[in-house]
Every structure is written in C-alpha cells, then in structure tokens.
Length: 440
Image 1 (tube, rainbow, N blue to C red):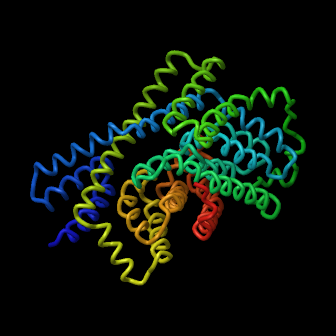
Image 2: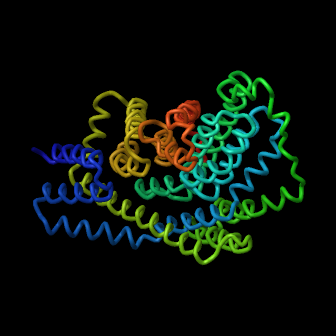
Image 3: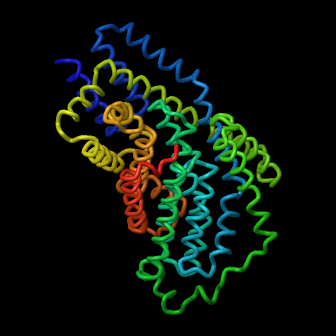
C-alpha cells in the first residue's frame, strides 16, 4: 500500500475512533503519530515531529488570543451584561409584532461581539429571554428555538473562537478573519430578524400560544418603557467593550492578542465595579478559562501534528489533483465540501470538524483559487449549522439543559430552531456566490 492509501486509511481510522468516543485530541495525535511512523518507518522521526508540533503550538504568541477572549467572555457573562442588553432591546422593540424574538436576536448580536462563544450566549439568554417570552404568550418551543438559533452568532461575529481556530489551522491572519466575519454576521442577524417578523405576521400559530392569539395577552401586559438614563446605564458597559476590543482591532491599533488582553481587563473592571465578582466567582472564572483554553490549545497542537502527517502522506495534493482531474472544478468542490461539513455537523462538534477537515481542505481550496479567508467564512457558517441539527446540536442541548423544563422537549426545540437553519443556509449561499461581501 502506498503513502496515499495509508493516509486515507488513517483518516478513516480517525473518524472511527472519534465515533467510538475517543477524545478528539488523543485521536488526532495517535493517528498522526502512527501515520508518520508507518510512512517514514522511523519512530524517532515521528517523536521529533510531534515534539516540534507541540513546541511551536505552545510558543506561538497568537495562541494567547484564546485564553484572553475566553476570560473576557466569562467575565462578561457573570456581569449580567447580557441581561441588561436584552432588557434594553425588549423595551425599545415592545410595540413590534414578535418584538421579544427580535430583542433576543439583537441582544445576542451585541453579546456575540464581546464573547465569541455560542454556548455562553445560549446559556445566558435561555435564562433571560425564554421566561420573558413565554410570559408574554410566545410558544416555549419557539422561544427556546430563537435563543438556540441566534446563539450561533457568537461563532461568526468577531471575536470568535471558531475564526481563531480556523485562522491558526489555515495559517491566515486572525485580524483578517475577524473583519471578514463582520458583514456575514450582520447578514445572519438581519435574516433572523426578518424571519421572526414574517413568522409573527404570517404564521402566528408557530410563534404564539393559542391563549395569546385568543386573548392578546401581550397587549394586557405591555413591557414597561425604559427611560433614556436607564438605557444609557445598561448599555455603557457593552459599548465600552465593543469600542475597546473591536474599535482597536479594526483600526489596527491593537493586534488580536492585544485586543483580547484589553477586553479581558475592561471586562474585569466592569465586573468589579458592578460588584458581581467575589473571590469564589473569580476562582471559578479562572479555572473555567484555564480548562477551556488548555483544551483548545491541546486540540490545536494535535491538529497541527495531524496536518503534518497528511502532508507527509501527500493527501492534500493527491485530493487536489483528483478534484481537478474529475472535472468538478471549484464550484463542485465547494458544494461537496459544504455537504460533507453539514453531514459531519450531525455527529461531531464544531471544533472537531474544523480540526479534521481544514488541514485537508484548505490547501485544496487554495489550489483551486479560493481566497482562504472567504473559504473560512463559508466553512464556519456551514459548521455553525451543525449546532442546530440533530442528533448532536450542541446549542439545542445547552438550551434544553439550562431551561430545565420537562414540558419543553428536546424535539420541540429542534423544531423551533429549524427555520433559523434555513436562514443560515440562505446566507451561506449568498456569501459563497458573492465573495465581495467579505471585507477581510
């Protein structure tokens, strides 16, 4: 068996190991090590290559971006910034049909701009938005589905951990990836808003309960109007964070790593000033940040080694030649690639999908003439769809677990989030057809 055959066999083994429940980092490292050892027939060479991958991963200054943005996200979460943002949006949109759903999307959009983690958004707004929506006559499945659907904005609107991971794997500028995610993120948010307004008007039975439609409870219990001073007080923290982080990043004043540091510092000050941070919570924030960051960094080291194994086996160049020789072309390759990611999203989490496919697909896409920043945005949107599709749907599981309501089944939340999947696929198509929308 040649090196190409060995490489393809090892990719199949990797999928098998992951499906059997092995940790993705362990599977990547084991398959990478076995592949280099078998192909080169040299145990010492495999050990040396693995040590180089580990050292370069730990020593890379860019990787400091990850723990800093994770720390910022945790500090923002415990400061009730998400709740305040929702309260303001709820007050401003109180007269709009479906206004609470729109408020959830709006708050999630702003919250995503300072956290970058969909799971954090899903957990925060499940506690904040779902009870308020159900109290005003929205169906629990629609309310939970809206939270789950809009939570994916955290993985696209910068700063985003998925964009960081893709940028590292594809060796692209993290700053460019962040800027490139801005317009698609806004398009996605606008699409969600249009969907909610249209459904509230033309399919109210999907949005509101029968009691609400019969008695118009929402009119009896109007959302209290919020004064300008209170709106300003609630929005100042989130505005400051956006200005510090995204303003400094987009102006070129900060590098992504420096922006993460400034954002984490600003979030710490906000948490202290608001009195929401004591020693116990501070320790919890630090331990959670460390756990998440170390896990991601180990994954990236393992993925780097796995990518080196693929290069040694000649897999990317071989697949690229096959694609070019098959007549598929760039468009055909992209369709097959997106379809594969959508299928993988049903059984794997977002990070695992990126770690497995990007080292193979990025060199092929570049050879076919794709801008890897544009290709990365397409990849991340396609991966995000997996957050809402069964059976894995991690955002759905997060909402269901946080909600803790036996009357709202997992299946009903999947159904409530399904229209948002349609919007995501539509935006994915628009971004693929019109690459000029990517401003990175």
